[in-house]
Amino acid sequence: MAEEYKATRDEPFSITHLLIRLVVGAIVLAITAALTPGFSIAGIWPLIFAAIILALLDYLALKILGVNASPFGRGITGFILAAAIIYITQFFVAGYTVSLWGALIGALVYGIVDLIIPGKAM
Image (spheres, rainbow, N blue to C red):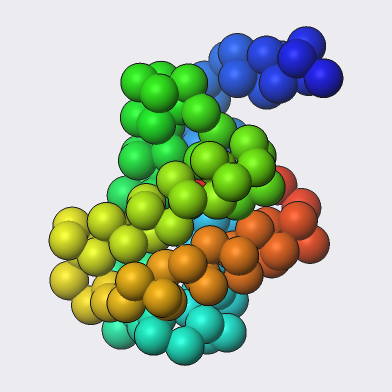
């Protein structure tokens, strides 16, 4: 399992891979916001910017903390980190609002939707 995690972490950079992750992340985020009470995104641009911020914060968490921030990536630590990233994103993106409970529920919904939709969103 460690080799599988290392293989996904050491993937070479490609613009196509980045765009696919952005699109998948935006789709998963839109579904999550639609299904989660206390979580709203007001339009397409806040959705795109939020997907970019989520990806950047996830990348920083992986590089600095060494923890995968997917809700099911590292157990309770990954779940709490995913909720924190979802919550913190509202301070960077206008039109993106989430309550603390919305972030916790959103992390769970995000993880479930991310499991269903192919590709890695967060």
